[in-house]
Image 1 (cartoon, rainbow, N blue to C red):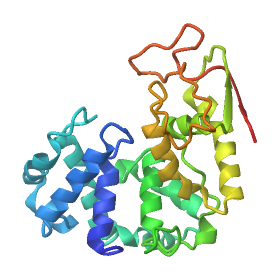
Image 2 (image 1 turned 120 degrees about the vertical axis):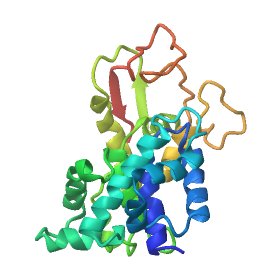
Image 3 (image 1 turned 90 degrees about the vertical axis):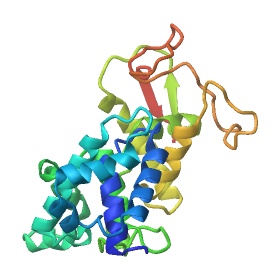
Image 4 (image 1 turned 180 degrees about the horizontal axis):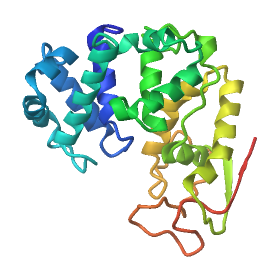
Length: 276
């Protein structure tokens, strides 16, 4: 049931082990659903901690062991959830929905950006870490009954969430290129991934403003566009074909297939600009 304790735990536990990798996302969330359906009485933080880490790892492993190319072993994933269960028992009576209330009781102001920064600092105590994963968790906990941001399990109002920026990763960047929002110019890029984020951040902020959406509401649909774009084997019936420049000669660090010599292997070409 939406907004129930079980729903909050399902979202929290899965975000904890969601490493933001498109190759495993669907399998990972499906495994979490099966785990919750088969063990409804054992998902609560008090049950997890009472049975002990070894027993929890044994149960957890059955559902996650066959996820192909997972970045961590089922045991490592189980350990992250076990630590989070301990954290919630100590700080929120085992209920992730109470995390915002606990934050406010500590004397902090009601500000979603400040709350996000505070959550990031709790990563060593068991909460999710990484900007993309934390904002994924934040978004799911703030969604209302109509999958719209505002009046969710963390009771931020919709207007309070307008200042939360869209988390930029390579799928969001790929979508920005595919939809022609950011132009790329051939050349060599020598720098960190963070240096290519600003033009994509500006472009998607403009899209959100012009469409009367919150930046975070663009996260899932845009991520899916970037994730599923087959830029090297473009389908003729692709919905975005009329606006996509079909640029194929680029790659991210870690990809196997080398780009053409005209492009740099690191991330993107050197010159980027928003095409607003």
